[in-house]
Length: 349
Ligand code: AHG
Ligand code: MN
Ligand code: MN
Image (cartoon, rainbow, N blue to C red; front, side):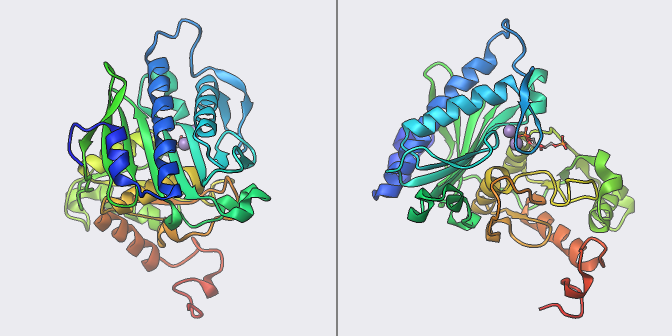
C-alpha cells in the first residue's frame, strides 16, 4: 500500500479473498462512487433552493429532515442495494431492512452527518459501519444490528469539506484517501493514521454545561482553569458540530471529542447514535491508536439493543480518554442511577 494509489488498488490488497472480503470491497467502491456524486452536488451553486431547507419530515429520533439528508439517503441506499448488501439500517429510516437476501453484509449508515452545517459551507459527511450478515437476520433484520462494534469488518466516514476525503479501516490500521476532483478517484494520502497521544484541544458543546453530570463538569472546569488549575497547562476548545469534522481534526493532530450523557430529557444516553455514529468512529479511533468510551467502558464492547439507540461518546487521544474515565470513576453518583450497584458502590462486582 503506497501513497498515490487509488482506492480500488488498495481495496484489492486490504480485504481478504473470501466472500465477505469481496463484498466489503464492492460495498466500499459503490459508496465511494456515491460520495463523489454527493460531493459534486454539494459543490454546485444551489439555484434550485437550499440543500439545508426543511424536507417536511422528521427521522426516528425526531430530528428535522433536510433536503440533503434525503438526497444522501437515496444515493447511499441505492449504492448499497447495487453492492448487494443484505441488511440496511440508516438514521433516516425507521427499521432495518433487507436489500438483498443473498448478500454477505449488514451496513449501518448516517447518510449525512452535521445536517445543521449544510447551508453554512462547513464540513459535513457520511458515516458507515459494515458487519457480517448473520443468517438468522434474514427473517428478522434487526438481529443484523445486535452485534458488538468489535465485530465490524470495516468502518469509515467521508467528509465533504475543502477536500472530500475518506477515512477508513478494514481492521488493520486506518487509511486516509482524498478525492481527486479532476479524475473522480479517491487517492491514498496516508496509509496509517495514528492519533497523537496528547494535544491541548477539546471538543464539546459547552452550552450544555448546566445539564452535565459532575464528572464532566469537573473535567471541563479543570481544562478551563488552564495553567492555574490542576492540569497546569492551557487548553483550546473547538466544536464544529459535525462529528466527522471534529473527528478528522483529532485524527490529524490529537485531542478529544465529548458528547456525554446529560440531565436533559432525551439525553440520558447523550446524543450520538451507537450503530451509525459511535461504533464506526470508535472502530477507527482504536485502529488509529486512540480510544472511544461511554465515559468508562469501550464503545466497541456494547451489545446494541435498538437500531437508533444513543450512547454517551468520548473519543480521541488515548491519554485524554483515560483521564475522562478517571473523572467518572472518582466522582460519586448521582451520575449513576443505582449507586449501590455502581462501580464505586459497595456491591460493585
Ligand atoms: P446529524 O446531523 O446526523 O443529526 O448528527 C449531528 C451530530 C454530530 O455530528 C454533532 O457532533 C452533534 O450532532 C452536534 O450536536 P449539537 O447540535 O447538540 O451540538
Ligand atoms: Mn450524525
Ligand atoms: Mn445524519
